[in-house]
Length: 324
Image 1 (cartoon, rainbow, N blue to C red):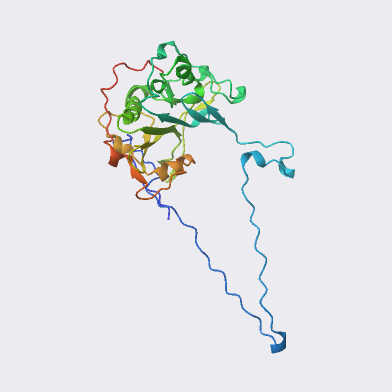
Image 2: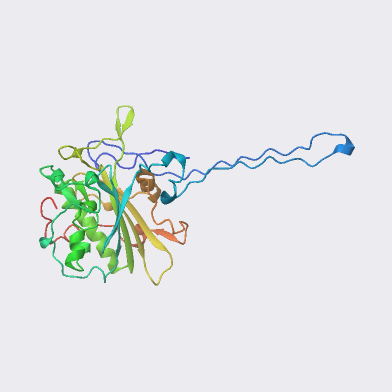
């Protein structure tokens, strides 16, 4: 049975905030035995085989592209639509209602992290691939008090100027607390992911925002700020990074899942404080990660059992520019 239990509290997230959605087991569908078929009592000469009822026809889910061929959507499907964006160094899904990414996925290797592109020549920009009425706007962030936080870091796209510039589309950006988070703890986590390529041949990382409930009195409430004038871009309460790493000379996969509050975090806080079961983040985000991998012993190993999950906060020789 699913259980709601606390996963981070007090000194880790500050202010005594307690969040749910972790440490759960998947609920298996209850199997209901069909009642036995009984042969009706008849005279001997009229004895017949029992007649089975016709099977119940269950309606099937259909794919997004096939569900308009019916009377209800004769004049169009209202959505929701998540814009899929495939770029040189990442793939992303953009949420039109929240004006935030749903997720941004990367594949990192020692080779594809090489390059000399410099972020100093890149500029944040609105994404023309998203319809104008649903875009995050540059003016939304102006004097908002939040940094424009990358989901795919600019430092992961040094291959060339075009790749670097693509990380500055606002479809790859979420509002993040600057001091103590985007420019510090989150940046150190980005470095940790890159450094995994030194001990793993392939690293896959999926990052994105979360909007988690907080206990207010006897109720659980989801509350978040919206920036812009008029209000346009949601400010996530948390951010996740789900990491899968693989070595060519070893079977199986190492997977780690982390959810961090969008607030200043003391550098002394261990990264493992934010480690969660993968299923907890899937439940909170409404997403499935690496679902082509069978999750069983011998196939999947916790990332922190394969490598030390520790951040090096001295690794940043140059601070991120304010608001970036």
